[in-house]
Image 1 (spheres, helix red, strand yellow):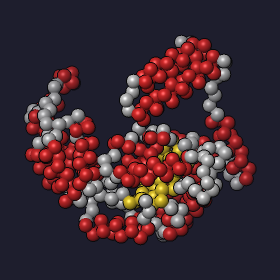
Image 2 (cartoon, protein in one colour):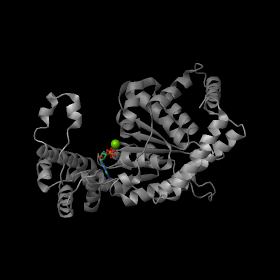
Image 3 (cartoon, rainbow, N blue to C red):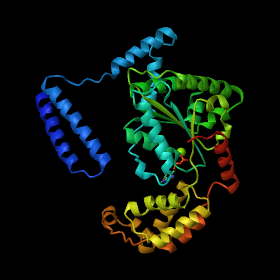
Image 4 (cartoon, rainbow, N blue to C red):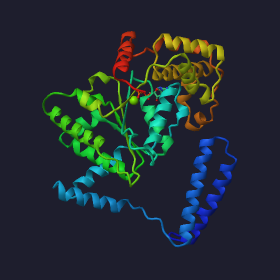
Length: 384
Ligand SMILES: Nc1ncnc2c1ncn2[C@@H]1O[C@H](COP(=O)(O)OP(=O)(O)O)[C@@H](O)[C@H]1O
Ligand SMILES: [Mg+2]
């Protein structure tokens, strides 16, 4: 197809739409079917417009200019400076998320709460009394799935996912960090729906000395005003901030008040452990006996394993299986690449023995008294 051959493009879109529509009809997974139908509709729309001679134009460059002018004249920054920060955000902080809720074991009520909050925020017609959450705080031991949850929220909404490590922004951009935060939300609104994920959120409150404290204070006040800001209702722009922390007690109360939804992400119970083990073994195509699975799940809870520890355990056990089935694996390294490529890896069902050695090497990062501390904080400050 020639560049700018719009009639041909229109045909391609229309044919694509029909094909995806057909595929949707035979798709059993409801969510996937929904997605495909939407895609088919979009293609149809684009195809029809192209036929009519309407060329879809990206409106983004225009918006860029406008924001530059507004900020440039009111705040008096160098022309182009805002744009620079926004470019940085676009190039470095946006991630695409293909994570789905099914990739997360356990946490069923948490998933429901998040889904409800998100849906409620997006519904346009609602009584005044129902105020959407602009911020959700996820707290709990490390490795329990906080990042996964934020990614799944973005993935399921097909939202733009801004993955931001707060500590990194603070240390790298020092005096300029607060401009970066403004740029973050500005880009977030433009690319809405957006999920702004602030990881290691406590690091804002933790740095309390000298110069860092000053810049950190500025970042905080910028962030709080973004969180307080009125949602631009008419534009249908939706930016949800999700913050995560392993040390919720380090966050000061002014910040906490902006996060009315504070959700405890605890260590997995036995049922959740079962699901997480399945996700990291069986769902990846390996076999594992149900009885053994059950025993491993029990041991995971006894060892206070987080999801990350379980993932490590499974990975390690898989390696043990691979090594035992392919004793000469290392010696392959001396062979030419095509010989290596053709090697058929021996694989068998996972056994209790594969996991036995792994249990010796994986250690939980938390102690029982830590767990109690999270529970206590959740009781006092948590919600949902
Ligand atoms: N609930 C879970 N289900 C499946 N895998 C999990 C779960 N929790 C953690 N994991 C595994 O541990 C890794 C780290 O989880 P992550 O979401 O980054 O933890 P956190 O952000 O709470 O520290 C994930 O990439 C995943 O492999
Ligand atoms: Mg994380």
